[in-house]
Amino acid sequence: MAKKKFYVVWVGRKPGVYSNWADCQAQTNGFDQAKFKSFESREQAEKAYREGWKFHWGKGNGKKGIEGQKNKKPNSASGVTSDEIDYNSISVDVGTRGNPGPVEYQGVDTKTGEVIFSKGPISKGTNNLGEFLAIVHALAYLKKIGSNKTVYTDSRNAMKWIREKAVSTTLKRDASTAEIWDLIDRAEHWLRNNTYQNKILKWDTKKWGEIKADYGRKN
Image (tube, rainbow, N blue to C red; front, side, top):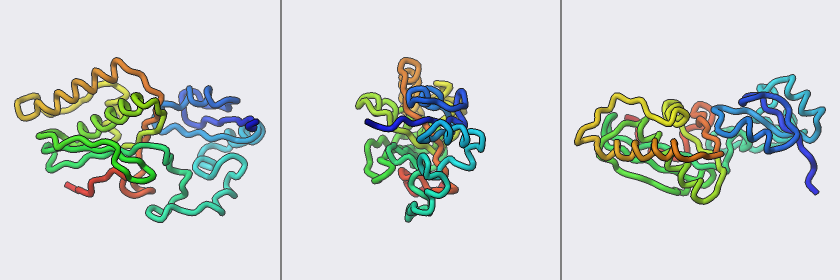
């Protein structure tokens, strides 16, 4: 029988200590930059909650705490410990040629870099619109296969649009942008008519390097 765990939510809808995973998820799923962690006793969890996330979050699991870092091997590419990144996830990114300009996007397995889906090039769009489409594509794909995997993006604007279920852009609707606007309309419709439990998190480029789905284009 699995040991009972207690969950600390430092940043979420209602921060506190929770005695089951379902309650923790209710406070963190879909919450931007949520910070939470499991502990093996209520005493440890309450102590960690009082001390704050900066002292514990991303420092190993459960009772290992800070000391657990000593035995963690850093990711060779970024120099960070593996438990800082949720590798059970999809990372999305956009490749553009000009902004606005031709747009393509892809979603990859964060751990392996395997391409899971890709779209484009779309004749004319913007980087943020491509990021928005990539996130919605990932959410729709994960819902179809029944997965609660996390989605990583490096676009705060796209994350905001996902929460609002609508984009805010100066890109005009005309013949040259008809293709991307059709995709945007469909994506907004999907968001308004579907629910999901997946976390959408901001990729920390400064700490971890370029997102795994990066096209390597700097325009």
